[in-house]
Length: 363
Image (tube, rainbow, N blue to C red; front, side, top):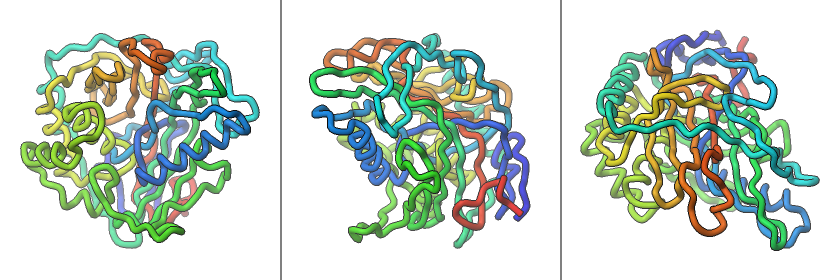
């Protein structure tokens, strides 16, 4: 298998060749093998709580989705600042296999509605200009990223806010979504990772959807922005904190760990431009410290702003983050403005011939 260095986007990908050998790479997200990963994350957190009587709860589950472009630059970590995110004092989980540490914080970037359509149009054009080779049967979409999540941990009657340490995440998915593999220390203690193949041991089959897509499923989605937006609203009805926020989150999830076909990747950005409340944040930082411009939307219920970060020049997708912008009531009030609820950065994306293949393993 040949290794193809990544330059500006998927246009540089070659079939059967892992892409973009980058020195360091972070990533987020928000939902892969959606139901299974969410469940495994909950189980892992509960396990990490040991014999404590309280329960561990995450305010946001990090499981990304399809992403579109990956730049090859990465920043070194320095001092107490990791990827533009400051580590502030906070407790780690005693005796926990789940890597937790100081709370991640950042400066809240200024948001404006000015220039949203123009920016998303530029991003759509950049995406449309990339070459997206099809994923063939027997191949896998491979994504490597760095990511970290923040959640509220409750032990007995005491609740505290903790953040995961920045860590590598690797995922492989077959085009039909029935085979896959995940290596993520926050989900499974084994360095070898775990299978995502379905049906699982309970016989649950894989059913692709907007919240758990396969590559084959993505090829069936409409590319007309109006039609696509109607479909998103219809299929996510009742989910999340309102239809507009859920539509934005659904599209954002499709920018992480999957591989939308060329026409769909461009259509996703044109669709996002039609969602009310979308803004531009002129300076945002991904998990590895790359500065970019962000397309964002504030969830009024949670007080959190989801930001999709793009390179300021090439408009290539860098990663995502979720920042607490406003105070909220209840237990979530423990998460103060400036807290990074989730951060990620995509470093490698490739079409490979087998599970556990990446650019460093290609022969």
